[in-house]
Length: 420
Image 1 (cartoon, rainbow, N blue to C red):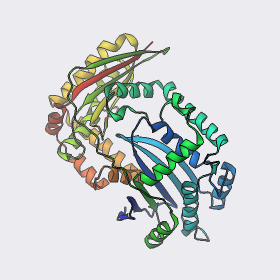
Image 2: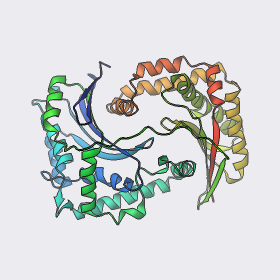
Image 3: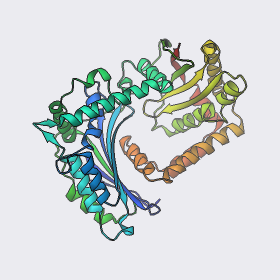
Image 4: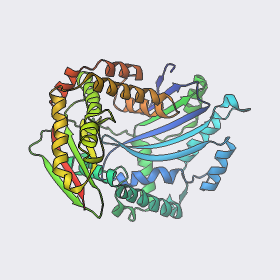
């Protein structure tokens, strides 16, 4: 990976250039940050797909598709995601590197993306109603798909209960019961406000001429800007007065158990954060992990089991699929594996396998276009300058004693069970 360059374009618009000569494509990503807020989450979730469905110059999906074909088969998409207590709207366009073409298309690609984002299709002061109607239904289907995926549903329900008085409990796709009431005019006014007031990151990844890219982006994008909102850092520390136990019932054949733990560890505290990440992988990061070996294999108590860390909130969670009658035993055994981490009962093989898995995962970010764009945006969002290489080094240095020490700070907050 060549040197990554970050350029402040003013008005809280930042440009990140990621040279990657091994790809035959260039990826341009626009990330717009909002604070997770229940009053606007549903509207925000509607915006990316409406914006990419038609604009003033290219007023339908068919016309947009034809234009993308003219740009040598470029592709474009929009999405909403949750990162900590932020809701991020993203727009991405991937195009063939002009070194492999007979013409310079980068300027046209950026010009097209600017048309889509900054000159949306507006009828009578609002988004076109027939497009809005389609995207409302698509959003309903997307929310329903989360409910149908019982593992994901259980995980989100656990976080809703665990973080009930925190922004992290808000869904990145919003809420079905709010969708029908959103009008085209209301949504357009909200979109204009978002463009004016949100921090914006532009990330370019691929094989490109740096001077040309900077010049084209400065000239092409026409964001109207106003007073930019402050997006504070998430609260990651919380005292636990008592463990919440929550049970939901559904017509299902397999129980879904999720256990949420507070670590109160700051991702910027590398002396604690990296031991936490490695320790979590020892706990439930794959076939080598304690929970997989001791709960799934030896006890045959679950269909799947894994653990992960939510970086921004410092939450460690365990997710598992079990038979309904095995609930008590599964909870007991999960807590036993946590206790073994706290006691430093970790073999050399366990820690080496965990480090190896994490390092391979980090290295794989460079294998396909887009991985490094998301990585460097996440780093910018968290005001971190760590490179992949530095993170790999930090993982490599973690000791069993350090894992034991941070594991002692882990406290059970919520036990959620979805049963029949």
